[in-house]
Length: 431
Image 1 (cartoon, rainbow, N blue to C red):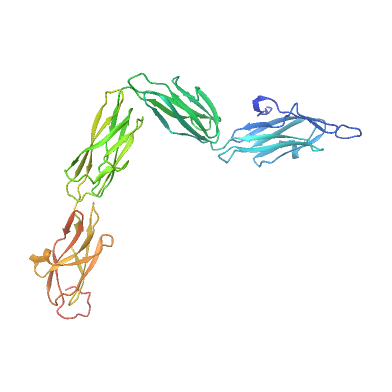
Image 2 (image 1 turned 180 degrees about the vertical axis):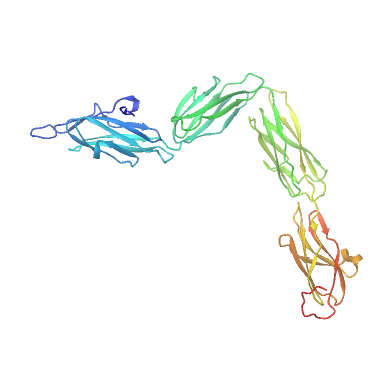
């Protein structure tokens, strides 16, 4: 079966390099390249994929050469890039490996230096078409917004419905990065209406991208998504607001009652937030200070629409901050006892607030330990080692470990040890 050649020609017109010349002999005309067949600036556009057998017909009555300056273009005919008389130039292109359009040239030249240049543009191998924003929302009056298209290819933007236009048209062709003017007509309905703009690349190498466009209804709508709980250590809580009108969120109550300085909207460090209409949830984020109380705290927020045509609606949402938990302190163990000192190790953890102080408290009377002498320690992770100095020899001491956070101080169970009466050979022995 014969192999058919592909003609990749701009505007589907044949490209012919007509080299009209008398190449040898006496009294012959100078070489001449006819612009009737191959005009300066001839362009061939190819896709980013590998392709073969692109053809440029050549008419000549003498020898000529053909070369290319691009390593992704391969001249397959004529052999060695040399031709004579009328024949076709055939070339292949390799798949593009760059995300932008690349350009190469094919030069057809006679012996006297007369030449014609064909420009070959190859579209990107990795097509990118990215709209911004990814979706659009208009209030019921409609209006105009800007859609930015970031691309390295040719593309088409098409509206799905008659009330939505792109640059005053239903379909627009573009290339590279551009800004489109999107216009939506006024919505006379009580409920929202939905349209879409579809972006399609010229080579269909990526799936069409849809930018959904919503025009809000004339009846105020309000939808809230719940907020997450906040730990006693503090942090943020976010709830979503969807409204087709401008809206306001205001903190109306804090429980337990008291100071109002432990929470605020991140938006403006206040207890009031203002929001814009949108087709997607708008994040309303509140920041919380650490809760040193063992009791949980609750914030009550009222959100309502601000419609100039009335019929406003409101909803209430609550955010809960958990109460703190006390540190957990484990029973100390003796690692070394001498006549006048002892070294003990203990562990302490806190599930909520950080431990700010720790150590040992001791006394000779087991009933007076909590009021006894304190020796501070330092946690290394969850473990601390503390040495108690200035002890009496041969004496029994009662000890508890302690750890303090903003929620308060916790103690371990009590244990005891006895100092040596006389020096021992091995101070690490435990009596």
